[in-house]
Image (cartoon, rainbow, N blue to C red; front, side):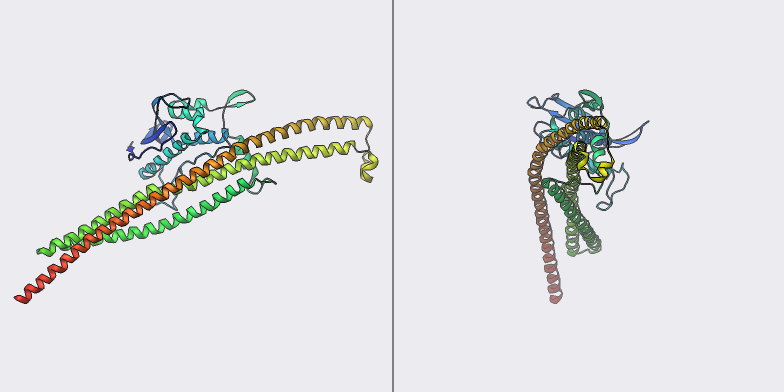
Length: 422
């Protein structure tokens, strides 16, 4: 087994909690092999949320994070649930091993899981969910995975909302879609495409940059070997050349790693957020489709009742062929009216569900747009600072190299003058 401690990255500030994931372990038990993450949270006495105060620490598997997210998605369909990092590596944008125990993969997943929990802690609705609190502080948190069905508390199993979304299929859409949500889906598709293109271009640029840095390393090796064979002052000058290229290679590689962790991984997280947005839109479409189906059922029942109450003389030739006795007609009318009451109640319930969903979902969209703009602005500003720092560092290294080259030229001129005098 191995234990990995992540870099001391600052925790994302939340309303009342500071959540960290700094330790990971690989464990082998009778249940199999898996990686666990130590979730630590500090809850001050001034916390306004109804949660146990103090310092808490629990070890969680990736599957538990996934279970928490699915439960929140089921019980809070009107919320945009933050995404989880990929369980396995995406080979299109990474050259890491596909082994789920790979240390690089685990190290990259750790801050993403911490970001997931901090996003939940920042959310005005999700931060108050008792199951989220249990996940953070209780060892046996699964006991709280219960839902209310007709006033009775029962153990939760995934299904209802996910089944609705799956039942819609790729082509079944509401007849009257809400433009606010169709625009959100279009935005998610566009953003995901742009991020995908940016990641693909970054992969190509990173390869070219690494090839260049490798060339710097080759120059460093060449000058260092040259300096070993040069006994005069030129040896020191060549050694200085080697140091310049060695510094440039080392710092450039460090800059690429920092850029990967601080910027590119965040872009991948936003790409996953696009899937969360489309999942959110899918829930709205499921609610809207259920309302439209209830509305259609009411209309069909009303038409059937109207047909039963219409005199045979007004039904045309085929209608007059299907004559029924007054008793039969009265029985069917009574059954149809009873059925109509039931489907109208179902329509009212579907309309109430739709109204409540839209009331919360619209606020969720506004909150997401504000948070997205804030985070993307901060991330791009950080990326600009990284590039500026790297350019300044490169400039300083090349100035140092130029001084060394100027000294080389002066030494060569002095040697030439000495040879002339001789």
